[in-house]
Amino acid sequence: MKATLFTVTLILSLTITETVQAKTLIENHSLSLQQSVNETQIAQSTNPISLGQAADLITQWLTAKSRIFAPPFDLQLVSQLTTGTLYNDTLKAIDFLRNNDAFYQYGVQKVESVERFAASGNKATIEVKVTEDTTLYKRGQILESSFNTKLVRYNLENWDGIWKIANSQVLN
Image 1: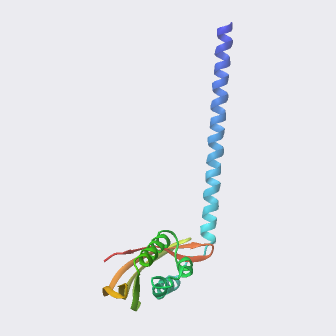
Image 2: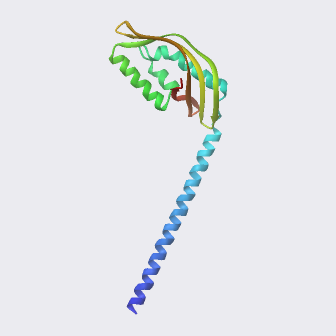
Image 3: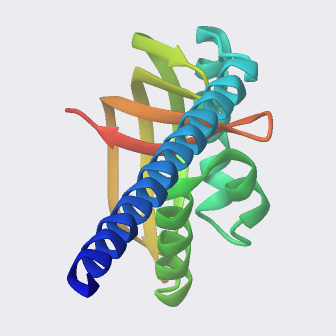
């Protein structure tokens, strides 16, 4: 009788445990689905950026670089225009320039053409041909100078209704 009682208790215990685990999995799955629905609603409530707005953001970035990468190194512009990797990389570049008594000076900066553009929810990607004339100074002396046109991919993200550049990559 004791063995039978023990077996019944064990079976009931295992059944209850499996039921609790199954119920927990179902509840977690429901939460996961709800979170996914909420994220979709947030992404859909974000107005996608237009091609013109994306190109304007890149132009703003190019124009701001002369104030970002030269004294007094405008950190407010960095936070207004960038986020993510580009934000962090830009702060590191500013620190490097400050620590080495260096800065950039820019001549021509122009978006020549938009090659590709795609936007969905709070993210967008734009590939543009950019012409830049840059000169790097260190201790008042020209260290390096270039004038070229490059194909650059910019990844954009919308945070709290503001579109910012999250990353950039020179493609050629």
